[in-house]
Image 1 (cartoon, helix red, strand yellow):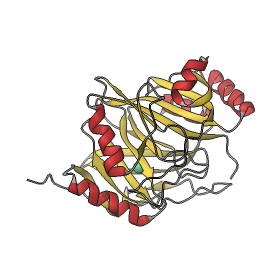
Image 2: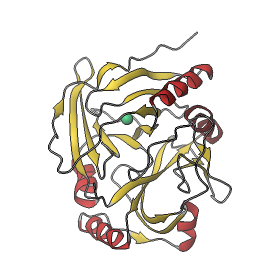
Image 3: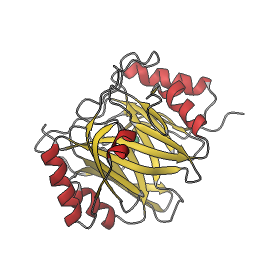
Amino acid sequence: MDHELEIGYVGLEVADPAGLGALLTDVVGLVPAGAAFGAAAYRNDDRAARVFIEEGPADDCTLLGFIASDAATFDAVAARLDSAGFPLTEGTAGEAATRGVGRLAHGTTPWVPRFELALDQAAAVPFESPLVPGGFQTDGVGFGHAVFAVLDFADTERFLLDGLGMVQSDWIEAELMEGVPLEVRFYHCNRRHHSVAVAKVPFDIGKALHHVQFETNRRDDVGRAFDRAWDAGLRFANGIGVHDNEGAFSFYVASAAGFLVEVGHGTRVITAPWTDNRRYDRISRWGHQPIPLRP
Ligand SMILES: [Fe+2]
């Protein structure tokens, strides 16, 4: 499927950068991106950097970066964002270098304080993780996905649909807990079922990021990551399960910052034209049970 955009990178501001870095490397299997970056940076493929971690009080996602497929697309997406009410400012060469991209423009989103549209995400040395021998699924689809909680869909969709030009894949209407409705909408910009999803929550939960996801090429690598999280004594938010709409086999581990990290495999692929934008009434086909804290 031809595409204009990939989700290129996220920035996470947390009180404990070393702890989150250890979760990403020792459990999920990312590798450090190298000393060239101002913030601690990690990657899950041969692109320069996929996750930037900075120390701070937010314990949230503070940066969302998308990569345009070429210069003409970069300009077209920037113009579309401007028309939707989200103007971008051209970044400096120095700013671009800190992200490992050739060019970037920055603005804001209704729910993440900084947005960057970038071009030419430089390739680093080939990705090799001893923990994830099969590697991560990123080719043409970005690093993974991010799911956010918002109070309202309107502004968010103006950014994602009108601005970025993403398309809704499907949605879930279920109960967050008894009597508390939950609606999650999933958006794609390439073959990946969703690069961004947004959950409408009935009250402010104090942070935008619900979870960030990394998708392995091999199903066994999800299980091995689960074992590593178990051995590290981490808190599982949800055990192994399969999502109903996207079909991914995955689990969720909680970071100290409060947001979750999901490791998954086997997400269904978007085909063009997409004709299966429909409602689901449950998050999971099976599994994903909350796992009680171990004594
Ligand atoms: Fe997810």
